[in-house]
Image (cartoon, rainbow, N blue to C red):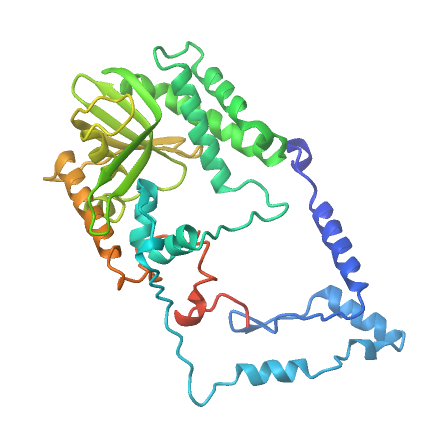
Length: 376
């Protein structure tokens, strides 16, 4: 099956790893270690290590595996409980106002609320994670591909849907896929998923366009608000805005799970509601200031279901009220960090996904939070 899909065989990866290992093994000093336990349970040495020990013992060379320094004893001493535990507090940097950012995008606001330290590390320290060498395309690249494909397709066929909807959608995908198509996993898995999503979109898109007389994609917005430390600029780039006689409908494309309605209503996921506030204020380019009559997520999975449309409807709350609350919350957030005493603290909240926190290691989260991310 792997051969038919054009995927490399498992042996190829094993051979590459063996080549790298033997190359490193030729250095002057080599330290070979293994985990004695995994999740608290003893771990058996690998068969490769056992065979190497047996071979060297048979050749009367077993002494070469004896460490020149008592590394195991040092490790045991390190793991012993100290008399007085060391408490490490989470970092709470307080940079001067002159270094604090005066602009934020709506996509940054959720991260700012959930983990201010990430804003400090990225926007003030200017740190960005380096891409891993040889890393295959992942969720980030897939999200970019889906966004770019939907944008290209909507822009190309904004006036009239094509007769061959699925074929036109896949043509847009191939136009934007570029170098990713060289990866066999993209051809084997991503393109078929996009085709299934295109079939779902072909069934549901005519209904969405029924009342729209114009569609704007990847449209930018900019709005300045007064803050204690001076003007602060809020920016956005909406995935899609449908313009009808009734008003505007704002769409955000997702490949993962969208925020739940509770998080949106509470202001913890304010991206769509802030975009609604910008739209009501007429801040989007080439989009007239009109009431916002709909907020929705379109989720592209290509699985089961292949696609999903989720409308944001909060009981007893209008979109205008949600937008007003979002702007008020954003203004309060800016005002709080315009106080030099407010730290860009590291936070961990149970309802936020910190899986892709690029700065957890920099913030020493495992140390002060008491988490154990490594094998013993």
